[in-house]
Each structure stands twice: as C-alpha cells, then as structure tokens.
Amino acid sequence: MTDRMAKLQTAMGAKGLDAVAINPGSSLVYLSGLHFHLMERPTLLIVTVDGKEVIVLPELEKGKLIGDAANFRAFTYGDDPTTWSAAVSAAAKNLDLPGGKMGVEPTCIRFLELEYLKNAFPGVEFVDGSAVLGALRLLKNADEVARMKQAAAIAQVALLATLMTIRAGMTEKAIANELIIQLLRAGSDPDMPFQPIVATGPNSANPHAVPTDRELQPGDLLLVDWGAGFEGYFSDITRTFTFGEVDPELKKIGAVVQAANEAGRKAGMAGLAAGKVDKVARAVIDAAGYGPYFTHRTGHGLGMEAHEQPYIFAENDLVLVEGMTFTVEPGIYLPGRGGARIEDDVVVTAEGLESLTDLPRAVLPIEDFIGA
Image 1 (cartoon, rainbow, N blue to C red):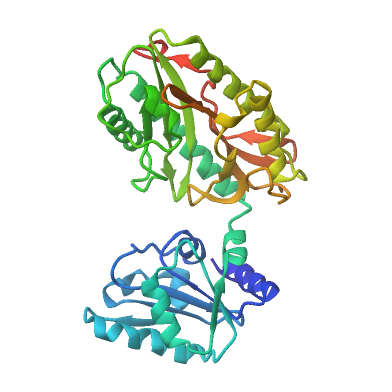
Image 2 (cartoon, one colour):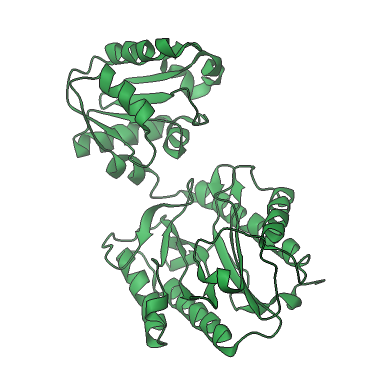
C-alpha cells in the first residue's frame, strides 16, 4: 500500500493535482485495503501531493484502521448527521489546503460527499481525477493477473455446472439464480462483478438484457454473460448456446462472432493502439454483412471493477502495454430474433494477448452439456 500511495503522489504531481478525495470503491481498496459500503454516512480518504493522508469515517468503522491504514489521521463522527460536516471541516483544517485542485472520480463521487468537500475546502477547485486514479490500476502485476485467472476458472466451473441443469421451460431468472448458486459453490467472492445476464430467444438480441420470466424454448439462442470475484478481482465472460433446432442464420452469426473474437485476440499486442483490436474484430463482422448489428465496443478493461481502463473502441489511440487486462467481446444482435456474443478476458504479454478464459468459443448446443 505504501508503494501505491507513492505512485499516486507522483502521478498527482505530474497532472498538477494538489490532492485527491476518494470515497468507497475500488480505488479506495486499492490504495488502502479498506472496504466500506456506500451508504448514507460519508466516508472520504483525502491524500495531498506532499504526502498527507486523512480519512473521514463513521466512529463505528474506526476499527478497520489497522495495518498501513492505521497511519491515516482519522476524523470520525457519530450518528447525528448535523455533526458530519464538522468532521470533514476538521480534516480540511488538518490538511491546510487553501487552494489548488482536488481530483475526484466522476463515476464514484456522490452529491453527498462533494457538498461536504466544497463546504470544507472553499478555495479548492474540484476536477476530474480519472487520469490519475484510473491509471493507477491500468497495469496489473503477476499477483493481480493470477487472481483474475482464478476468477475466470471459478466462473467457468460454475457455468458448466449450471448448463447440466438446464431444461426446456426453465426461465431466464431460474437459470441466472442457479448460476449464482454455482458461482458461490465454486469459490467466488460474494462480491461479483455484476448480476448474470441470461437471455433467451429474441431477448438475446439485447446486449444488456435483464433475466425475465421468459421460458427457454426449442429454436432459441441462449446468451450467458457472467463473472466471478476472487480476492477482489473479477472475471467477465460471455458464451452463446443453441437449444434444439435453430434458424441457420442464427448459427451463422454465432460463427461470425467466434471468428471476430479470434481475430481480435490474435491481433492484440504490446505497442498496438487499443482501437486497433476493435477495428480488426469489427472488420470480420462488417465483411460478413452484419456491421450494423454490432452495436457496442469490442471490449473494456477489467480488474477490481467490471469496467475500467483500457476501453477497446475504434477511436482509442491508447497504446497497449504489458500488464493491461481487458475483454474481447464482439457480438451480433438481430432485433426480434436473437443475438450472439463471445467474450474472453485477456492480458497483454510480450508475446501478444494471453487469454485467461478457455471455455469452448463455438456456439454449441446446450444438449452437449446436459448430463456431461
């Protein structure tokens, strides 16, 4: 944690930030090892470029400040909300930051914390700190990659166990619930990257479908997008299956998506722009005549969050570097009929992209797995 704080302060100096304020989330865990829920009580870690570190938190949470986190100067408050502002103001007084820029994470900070900060630091300008905080976790070390690989292994075991239970008439909700049970049995952290997406038939044409009471029927495609957590790191995988006799065109789009996935994984390498991976995968789908039906980017970064840097879209000129981890997940979605997506988790190595996931990528019949 000490090394990570030092890297944070170096990055702050390079980006002209005088401080950063971090509320509960992945960045706070990464920098401090502290896990807090986002709730009605504010929690804030504030770090200055010159190395001062304070934390504002409820009195009942103070027992978490052990190890490296015990070095934080703590400002606590009780249950009376009228006292909370005073705790943030006391922390601000300790930091003695009359002006400058304080970075926050736009996708994490809430109106609640931001208002307390603005009142406590009236001379400070609050700016987007993503370039500093997001970049900290951009490159994974061997231990982080190993955790992600284990998260992928857990997820794959859980899906195979789930597929063995699937029968005609099962609802999307029932399949999703079974998958969650199997994820926990296989060793996933209770904190998973997201609730599984299970979509059947025409619902599979919605990339971010929510499981419904629709029953699995012969002729359906079944799309499953799921992941596991292991020691704070996530996997995120998608596979598509057939059930019974399926329209030949639905089988075709599955084969095209598989080819696009393979092309993207083979193209990626250190020194290549992230956007190139998207372009290569997208070219396969364009050439097959389904370009308008590939409606999202080819992938996104993965680690302590289900979506983080780097983002794999055509216009992204960020250069891939060893240690970056992301998904490769092209898809084709035919409205009212069905959709296919094949998603793998990869890490950039000296040799190219190493896949952390290895389930068969072909769109296979569910019947092949039942009773296997």
